[in-house]
Amino acid sequence: MKGNPSKQDILDAMKQIDLHGIPDGFDKSRWYYLVHPITQKTYPPKAVWGIATGRKDFNAQSAKRWLEAKSFFVHDIRLEQDGTGFQTQVATALQDHEKRRARLKTASPQAEAFQKITTGYKRNPDVVAERLYLAKGICEGCQTPAPFKRKKNGTPYLEVHHVIFLTDSGEDTVENTRALCPNCHRQAHHG
Image (cartoon, rainbow, N blue to C red):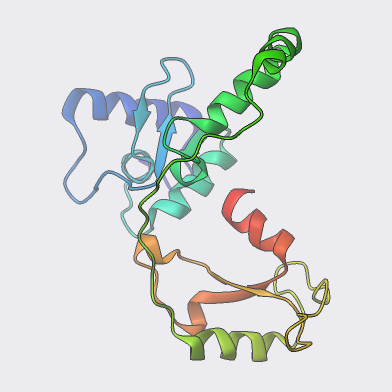
């Protein structure tokens, strides 16, 4: 196919997965699901982008970003609070003000507790320290000074972000990190 696929190329790639399955070399994504705009069926975004472009030299996060630039919706399950589709429920609740108000009148004021198991990564503190040192208190996203200083030690508050997520096999290296203000960090994950 081509390096800059059209929307039709992407839809055709989804159809190809329906007919032949996910091609060798493409695994299902742990976090991202491309949602078909009509059928709402989900597909692994890396496989769809790979079929549409004929490439394999990218990660799932990049595929997500490129598909979203083409106006496709790629769901990130990490945004779910409890695995039940919380963000989808919020989007649905926003659509009908009257029904939402009626439900709120009878809703319990106490949030229900649940347990959640997650995988964490032991990060190299030298990588974080070096990235913060290199940033010199300036956000590497918006190029503005850190929004505030840490109460504990008075250093500029920036968050160290992995460009390729550790969950996507990104390396814990200085080269794969950026020091970002909280707004830019949030945008990097959810923007």
